[in-house]
Amino acid sequence: MNAKLGRIFSGIQPSAGVPHLGNYIGAIKPWVHYQDTAPLKPILSVVDLHALTNPKLKPEILRDNIFQMTASLLACGLDPNKCIIFQQSTVPHHTELSWILTCCSTLQRIQAINTWREKVKLLGKEKGAPLGVLVYPLLMAADILLYKTDTIPVGDDQSQNIELTRELATTFNRRFNCNVMKVPEKLVQTESNRIKSLRDPTSKMSKSDDTQGSSVTILDCQDLIRAKIKKAVTDSNPVLSFDPEKRPGVSNLIGIYAAMKNISKSDALTEVESMDTLQLKNAVSDVVVEALSPIRSEHSRLMESKEYLTQVLNNGKNSATEIADQTLIEVKKAIGVL
Ligand code: AQP
Image 1: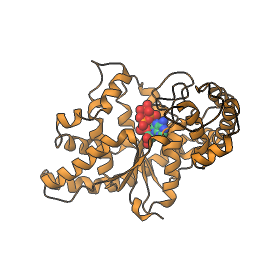
Image 2: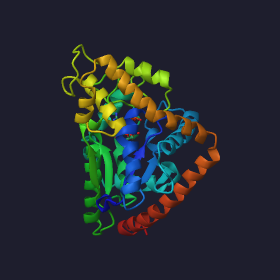
Image 3: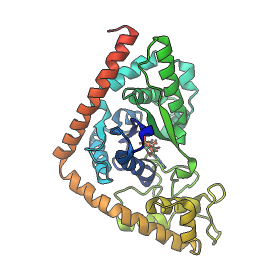
Image 4: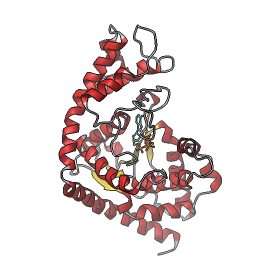
């Protein structure tokens, strides 16, 4: 048990129903580890309200994605008896606290966070992007502060949002002369743990990237996995080495190999050093196929039972609401509306 971890909160957007290899390696595998090592049940949210920042997401797709994502998390090994899994919008406290925090922040402060510029670019709507793309860090702050979170495992691209959350917690406590907000610590994933796109290994593997073959999803069949990895962009140097700066494609594959085998990158390099690029791709495909096959069949079994998935989310909602209720009452008393 790692007492330092305290309460962990993390979220995943159901912007696509099924996580990709980056989500699996960078987030879900660590969550499975935390559910056995953290002293309090980790809280994991299917953050559907965040997915609304994508204006292209259709209601019937989102509805299905929420089930698909929940089934994916369970199939990957998350155990509803060891963690709290819930759908964000079923706990309205998130939006309520988000508004209160919006009134504690400034436009200038939010505009200084550069993730919104990237999101606007990604959505391709410089003029028409939803305001949520700008203010989502305040909803994220509410997600975290509502559960008096101690530790937030995040990718380095989310560091600015966590800094904002920490600042908001401190400002709130100072302004309202209270100790309601817990200032969370971030557990930053280094750049080297980021899984890159198979088509462009200089950018991260992403659910919103619709370039064909850019990501492997956890439900891809064996043939598709092998085909995508075979086409992964590498370089013309036949000798393998690990150098994410100069050789992003090859290094990404070595990183995937290491993560799927639970070994260090240097051990992975030792194992694959004598291979050529095609052999490396085959070796990576083998370990990915081996790890994902049972997940794929468990996912399809779980999708047969929507009642069970609904029950898991309902139980999660009840547990999350119990904690969120408590915090929101304290917040309301502090700001003078209760
Ligand atoms: N490429 C990646 N490598 C390692 N970890 C990753 N994560 C995402 N992409 C990679 C981690 O997955 C968790 C959930 O991510 P998210 O759903 O909140 O959205 P994201 O970080 O914005 O990831 P995507 O795939 O690019 O989703 P969309 O396209 O919906 O925005 C997070 O812990 C994240 O660090």
